[in-house]
Amino acid sequence: MKSRSWLNRTTLGIGLASLFSDWSHEVATTVLPSFLATFGVAAVWLGAIEGISDGLSSLAKMGSGYYTDRLRRRKPIAVAGYVVTALGTASFGLATNAWHILIARASAWLGRGVRTPVRKALLAASVDPGAYGRAFGFERMMDTVGAIAGPGTALLLLPLLHYHYPTLFALTLIPGFIAVALIAFAVKEEERLPVGHVSFGEHLRALPGAFRRFMVAVGLFGSGDFAHSMLILLANQRLAPVYGSGRAAAIAAGLYLFHNVCYAASAFGSGWLADRLDKRRLLAGGYALAAVMAGAVLALPPGIGAFALIFGLGGVYVGIEEACEDSLCAELVPGEHHGMGFGVLATVNGVGDLVSSLMVGLLWSTLGLPAAFAYVIVLSLAGSLLVLRSR
Image (cartoon, rainbow, N blue to C red; front, side):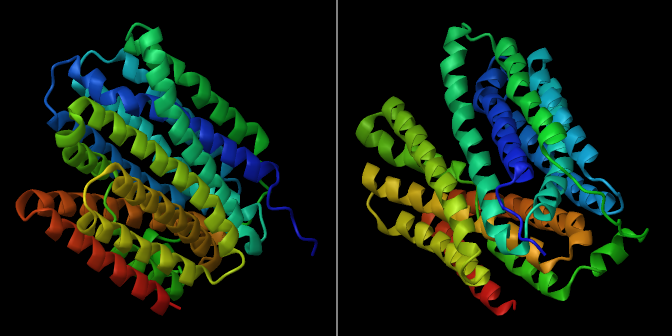
C-alpha cells in the first residue's frame, strides 16, 4: 500500500480551519469580561457563562462521537458545528443583557463540542498511523496560532472601532466562515463503513481495554492540570508590588502570549517526535514537566525571568500533552470507533479541567499557594507514572 503524505489537503484544511475558528472566538473571548462590565453585572456571571458553556461542550463531544461513528460521512456534522460556533460567537453583539451572552456562548460552545471528535476522526482517517503525531501536532500548532492572533486582533481593532463591541463581534464572522469554507471544501472524506446500531453503553464497552486504562491516566493528570489563566493572576499579584498594577497586568499579558508561542512550537515538535519515539514515554515526560512547572512556582523568587520560565514550561508541556494524547487515542482505538474514542478523550479532559481549576482555586484560597501547587505536583507525577504503566 502506497504511503500517504501526512501534509495533504485534509490535514492542511483542518489545520487552517482550526486557526481561523480559534482566531474568531478568541477575539470575542478577549473582550468578553469588558463587554459584560458594560452591563454592570457581577463577576459571577462570567464564571457561570464559562462553566455552563464548558459543561455543554463536554456533553456534546461525547454525544457527537457516539452518533457520528454510525454515519457513512462525518464531514457534514463538522461543517454544522463550525457554522453554529461562528454564528453563536457573532451573536454576542446582539446582547442587551448578561443572560443573552450566556445563551450565545453556550450555543457557540455546543457547536464547538459537536465538531471536535468529528474533526479529529477526519484527521486520523486522512493520514497513515505512523504520521498521527505530526498530523495532530500540526493541527494543535495551527489552533494555537489562532489563539495568538485573536487577542492581538481584538486589542488592535477595539480602539479603532471606538469600543463599539457589536461591530467587533460581527467581524468575527469573517474568520469564522473562512473556517467553515475550509472544512466544507478543502477537507476530503471517503465514504466509510459505519458502526452498526448499538447502545451508548455497548459502544463505550467496545473501546479497547488499553484505551480505557489510558483514559484513567489522562483523567488523573487532568484533575491537577489547572487553567493557565491562574498563572496570569499569580503573575499579576506577585509583580504588582514591584511594577505597579497597570504595568504588572501588561507584563502578565505578554507572558501569556509567550506561553502560547511556546505551546504552538511544542505542539508540532512533540507531534514530530511522537512519530519517532515511544509516545507513552514522551507523554509521561510532558506530564512530569507540569510537575516541574508547579515546583518552579513554589521554589523560584518572583520576577520576570522566573515567570518567563514558568509560562514557557507551561506552554511546552501543554503542547506535548495535546499532541501525544490525540495521537495515542487514534492509535489505540480502531478507525471505525474514532468518533467515540475522541469524544471520550475530550470529555475526560473537560471534566479534568473543571475539577482541577476548582481544586487549585479552592486550595489556593483556603490553604495557600504551597498546598495548591503541591496538589498539582502530586497528580502530575501520578499521571506520568500511570501512563508508563498503561501498556
